[in-house]
Every structure is written in C-alpha cells, then in structure tokens.
Length: 139
Image 1: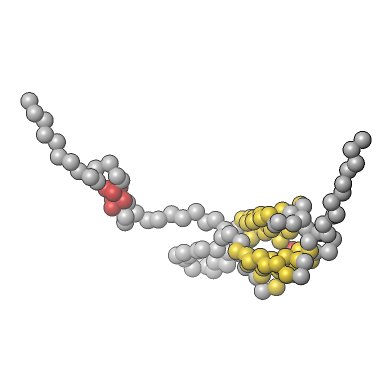
Image 2 (image 1 turned 180 degrees about the vertical axis):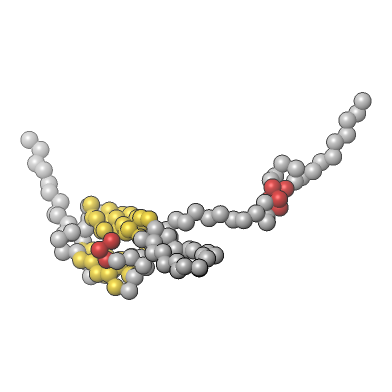
C-alpha cells in the first residue's frame, strides 16, 4: 500500500492564481499622489520645496509644532464631461493629501514664511535660537 505522490513546487505558491488573474481588469483606487519634497539647510534655516500641483494656495495648510512640520492640501476634482462624450479613463482625483516630517531643531514660526507658485510650495523655516544651557545650583 504505497502511496506515491508527485512533488509540484508551484502547487501552493500562488503562481496559478497569478496567471489566472492576469487578464482581469486592474482596479486601482483613485488616491491622491503623495507630496514630493526636498529639504535643504542653509544660513540658519531649512528650505523646503514641496510639489503640490493642481491645488490653489487657499487650499494648502502648513502647521508647525516644535520641530514637526505638517503640510496638507485639499485637492478637488473637476468634471467637464460634454454631452455625447464618453469618458474612457480618468486619472484625476479629489481628496486630501498630508505629509509630516520632523526636523532636528525646533522651528521659529514667527519668522518662517511660505510661498506657493507654479505647483511648488516653498517654505523657509527659521531655526529657533537655542537657549544657553542653564546650570542649577544644588542646595
């Protein structure tokens, strides 16, 4: 009563499902792209350039809490479908995008500024002056 089974290395690996679903339509959730940015340091300040295309400057929020910076934007979809026109593919989206990052030094909110032009948000984040270390006397 010997039972002989053949070894199939692809039996449980999911390869079969991969090829079975190869020609199924791919459904991608329409989520907004992330905010891409560059951060550089110069002359006692951080310079942040963040790409947020297709957003009005009134829809962008920047908040600073200590050394954490959060950039948020409300992206709106525009539908301009004409009568008799059929949309075959639409890759524009609507929603909110956010990006937070932490800098090594706390930021002085009062002297920092922001400018938005051609889809690029430029932040000049001034470093807060470091307070001198204070020595405590032990009594």
